[in-house]
Amino acid sequence: MPEANSLIVVAMGISTHQEPVVYMHKDCHICRSEGFSTNARVLLESNTAELVATLNIVENSLLMHGYIGLSNIALHQLGVSAGQLVTVKHAPVLTSMSLVRKKIHGQRLTEQELDLVMQDVSSHKFRDIEIAAFLSACAGSRLDVDEIIGLTRAMVACGKRLHWPGHERIFDKHCIGGLPGNRTTPLVVAIASAAGLVIPKTSSRAITSPAGTADTLETLFQVDYSLADMERIVNAAGACLVWGGAVSLSPADDLMIRIERELDLDGEGQLIASVLSKKIAAGSTHVIIDIPVGDTAKIRTHADADRLEQLFVKVATACGLQIRCLITDGSRPVGKGIGPVEEAKDLLAVLHCASDAPPDLRVKSLMLAANLIDMAEACGLDSALDKATQILESGKAWLQFQHIATAQGGLRELPEAPYAEVVKAGRSGVITAIDNRRLARLAKLAGAPFDVTAGLRLHANVGSRITAADTLFTLYSETTGERDYALEFYRNNTSMFTIVATQ
Image (cartoon, rainbow, N blue to C red):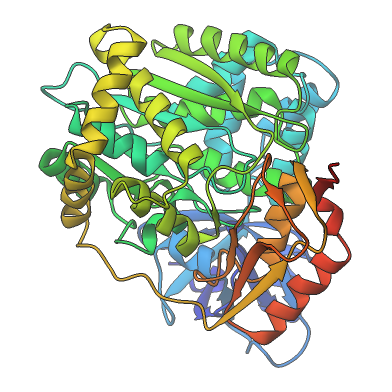
């Protein structure tokens, strides 16, 4: 390496999420000779890799001259460790940004242009603000169906792709989200794979919700696996339940979805491309999409759901996927538990056919599993539902879930929250509505999902007749501070439960 352009790596121990950031002293000889300033884009080269990163300037003695600090993700992406040498240069001009500007001005992007943008995003060449610009330009209904198809294919192309020799059909399901609880995926996978369907299921962690499927499952067994491990698990158990972030099936999507959540953007085109690109990359051929609709769900009206269904079908068909969209009730939480451990308790109760298992979670999971079985066997929904019910009630689904868990390191004992606060209804009547968004926020303020035992357990749901002395929910937390914070939020938002007095 040319010594004049080389600096010694310092591991700063700073998390910058997925955006690589580097730190140089303002009087560093490279800073001065190259004219680098704060937020400059720089190209780092090691013996084995290169990386484009954003520069932050250090003005005190935090860094000595001749050294360059790297954030955690920058270290990981460049594949270096402290003490190694890297060269630093001006980053090349990012031509794909001209395509982002083209979209900002309302013009269509071709599949080839979208492919270039996704390649640069997945290579960490876009800063967060540039990803935000692209997402904003595509939000709402600004992508037509051909662009959504192109974006889906581009997102698949920039990641790894699984193949399953010996299996012509691979099954999967996805819920577009927006409901607290609703932990149907583990149940559907257990039932459908017990019926003989191959399901390599990858799931996400929570970003703005009280629990993602991966968060809930991680309280029961390990979910952080490589692609090779994922293949091993599926070959052993016929299915898996792993965290999608560890397998890089659609890395551009993993980077963009983080920015979407920060901006509270969820454009239909990006949503469809995000979901389908990961299904295609996982090798799926047949997919069920659950679209909950409700006043406080992600999809508010049946007209919006119908439009989303039509787009899903068009894009999936163009990409060679067989798809079935199911528009479901999103007016209320599904299940009793909200938060990783509480949701795990619900799915175990359903698998054990316990008398106190949430009936709505059981019914919905059976319905979704029946649709997958019907796609596989073309036996009709009634027959498929009978088969799914028999698998659950006979204990075969529980045995299959244990089989998957064993392949993923074995079942764990669920921990208990140190603090539990019983909250009374305070009013008598019938619960006619629950605000899903505020209920989810309540569970998050209690500490979910980062504190896995935090969250809440509902003792009543929409349609329940209650008295003022009845328990409405139990709040769980790992600290008194989070408990009190959440309870204060509830006292200011008791209207999240609509209770109508009756004669």
